[in-house]
Amino acid sequence: MDLLAQKAKSISTLKQRRDQVEEISHVFLLPALLLVSGDTLSCRVLAWNQSLQVDETEIQRYQAEIDEACWKLYGIETSERQSLVDPDGSALPSEEEGEDPVDGDEDSEDTPTNTPEALSEYLASWFFGAAMGRWDVALATGERSIPPLPGPFDKLPPVSRGMLLGADGLHPAKDAMGRFMPEHDLLLDDEGENLDLVRRVREVLERVAGERADVWLLELEGLLGADLRTWYRRSFFECHLKRYSKSRRKAPIYWQLGTPSGRYSVWLYYPRLTRDSLFRLLNDVVKPKVAYEEQRLAGLREQNARRSELEPQEALVEELQAFRDEVARVTPLFDPNLDDGVLINAAPLHRLFVHAGWRRDAQTAWTQLVRGDFEWSHMALHLWPERVIPQCAEQRHLALTHDLEGSLKTRGVEDLIAAHSRPAVKEALQTLLNASPQAGGRSTGRPARASRAPRLVPESRTASEPTPRASRASAEVSEATLAAIREVLARFPVGAAKADVLSATSIPDGTWNAAIAQLLASGDVERQGEKRGTRYFLVRR
Image (cartoon, rainbow, N blue to C red; front, top):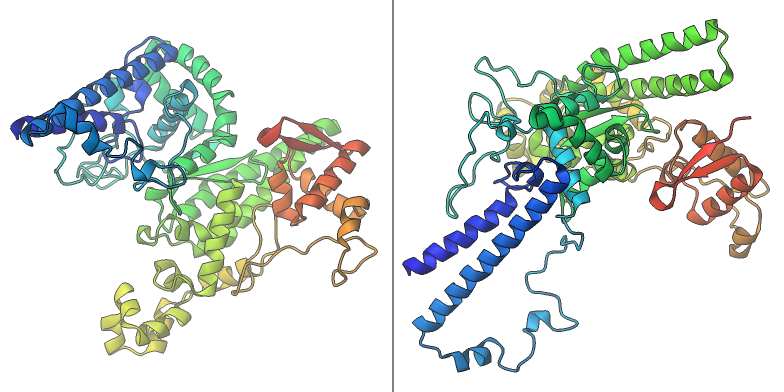
């Protein structure tokens, strides 16, 4: 039995060594390319894959030894073993054609995680997290000793081994005086700024790679297929969202808020969010940025700059002003509580998210909040005390959830509603519910369901008249639809994806295909890229 325990523990340790490169694992330590040696990233990719092969060979050897020991314990001869494992000489039932594996995971994927491209994405993700203050760079530089792997039956640790820890051994990290480490809880996609994400990522890279930092950077950008700024701006959140999603639960911890084009964005760190986070974002970051770009625009106008210089700056200022107004709109509403979960906390910010898929998910959660589906949440009580507190008086589980059972025994419902109501919150809530649709997200003015932008129809036909199916494919797209698409594309100086236009206009796919073909043929729009990377640009005449 001691032999079996020893072999089983060895297998557990080897599998933990695999998991220690997974950010979402409680044993996470460092990305794979920082756990092996090599002057270049390519050498490290090769070294990591070789270590995986060695570990797999060891696991198979230990498993074979366990199997052999078990056969001997039960006195089963070699000739009988195959018939016991597979009596009919066929595959096990769970593997038969047409049947799902018993332990199948609906989230399993076929995409390899040990390719050079995947390993480079994980490394870039770690650099970002280290710059944000999630991961401890000292583990990669040797300044902090490597924590031991937990035993198979040890209590799960409160945080993973790779996190930046505070004086209390917890995360988010705080020093002995109770101050957060690092001080910042956001990064900016804004070249030249102190908190510019590329600047901070490069600082981490230089600290880890030393004199090889420039070589690593060139190699990393080659593996990512883009320079760091472009990759973080356009691709990182998609990778991050996929990695931090499980079944139907999506829980990204880095939030990208920004203009619809993604030309300017701010990244927030979810575990560090407080009710003051958006106030500081608005007053310390967004307003100064808008003022600076407005001054640049005024300077260009005074210099009688060419239209080719003025128009991009005018578009940027317009986007930034809209972003500032959106942040100001939701700032009084934002009061995050980690017990509510990522999606509910993100819901009031749905119009600010750059990623179209996550924006839709957050908007759906907002619609459900408005409808009253999450009355147990802290967010619901914060925004609608007049709706939640009367239910707490009738439903004890809600009263316990909101810690109101004792208060309801000594105070009246109306008194408690008044104590939890804030005029600024009510005003901001009404403003958000009545907000007009925009490219960053649609309004959810009606509690019953999310409102949709009006469907565009040909000018010769009213919205109430049905459109014959045959005419949709054959007739030219109306000028109203074309104008709407041009208007949306004008907001995206660096080009818009198809999803951006559909999100802003709600036109169906069939109409989009006909409309974009017509605009491309007329020369009003240009197209760049292929497949998911395709972007459309308005041609300014």
